[in-house]
Picture (cartoon, one colour):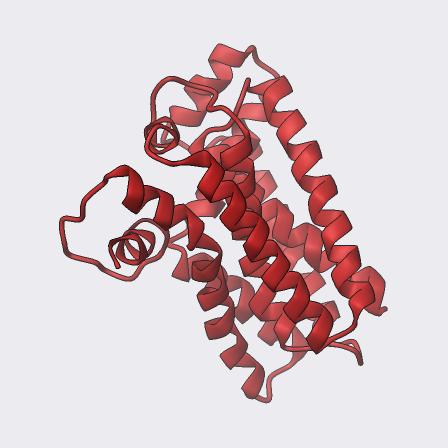
Length: 249
């Protein structure tokens, strides 16, 4: 129960006004169930499908709910990551930019392209004949499972910060096993509810993304930070929506 409450406290806007234990078991559990927090956000987003709105309006609401319900946590990580990477500075300067609360020009441009692009892509997928509501539910699930897998497999870039603290508190092997199980559950549900070609394609895209993103973080930052992990959620979701658009068009 503490792990569930911690997950709500750290990764959603749901208020949990309680001092919770931050021991190894609780933090490990928090990351192990994190994909299901994404699934919950996806389930709530599915509710907008019942309104007789245009695909553009529906797509906008799905994207908006994803940002609002997560408290903008992952979007903030994407903005900071964009500012740091596109500064083309050395690694130490990039860390300074990641820690800077101000938003730079690159962050603004990146988030504008991300939000507008995501709304358009989601809207296009909603307009296809083969659209299924489970896509809205599972994409936030898969993006969080991607984060947990990356976190369990990758060292932190700095010896400070929240990611470093949590990395020292988790049992990486358990989080890794949980992430693999979560992926298996999600892919099985996707294949059963739609078709197995979509599930297999998702598996390939996610595997490729995890490998490429991990290599990119190691090359440019020397590991992961909380901002980089947040960016992975946003980018992986866009990649999955693009994959759907290509498959269903």
